[in-house]
Image (cartoon, rainbow, N blue to C red):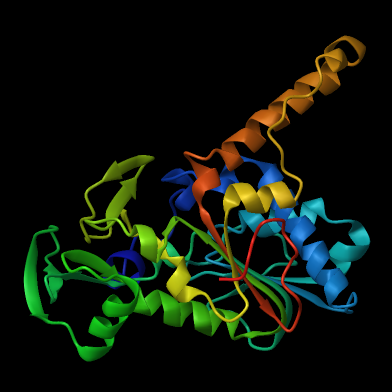
Length: 313
């Protein structure tokens, strides 16, 4: 998985091409409402921090920088002028990216603000286990059983994915998230991803591939994205909140409610705009789609957001 995604000519690092947006649709690509919601979350963090002179916004797994560009555009000029935006990505910096955005290979240490990872953890490479052994995979996707699991991976499964059979060992994701969130001195760290929790692990795992907008076999030859859903509950640090994207975006003001029909008569153009926005919001919050994504919200030196009905993990 590491070689297929990030090795020489790997799926995410090969030069040219459309980037992630050319292969799958994320919330960032679905609507500017998503970046606007992240901008509102950044404003909340800014207020909790007392409006510092420099406000860091770190986008981990930044793709082509679309989210950062959208957030900067959604902020008031005075706030945007204080933001230090960092795009954390292993691919080369894309041409034409906003000069304000720092393009870096890892989250910078000692930041103060918001660290946001949208669909990053599902591409952190992980091991697959089956019946107490590692699953080995050839370049053509053929699988075979390897050595017995080592103690640390076996312990992770016993705690977080009990029951035997086939499982995805999320220990590497736990460590990656802890390292990323650990770069924050104060602020909020948020991970958004396809997710599951201990009470509802998928019995056969979720490993799959994507290419050109279609789901394909996860052949690790660099030709497709290789991804697996995230055990967000095992990643969660102290004081974290776990909620769905539908819940998070509702708290951040994103609603799929239709505009009042009376607006169509008084201001048809405004009605059409509002109807379009409602459709985009409905896609972002769809219980059977993007709205079912998991949000892991981890406070660092600030209180957790007071979102109705959401308790700490």
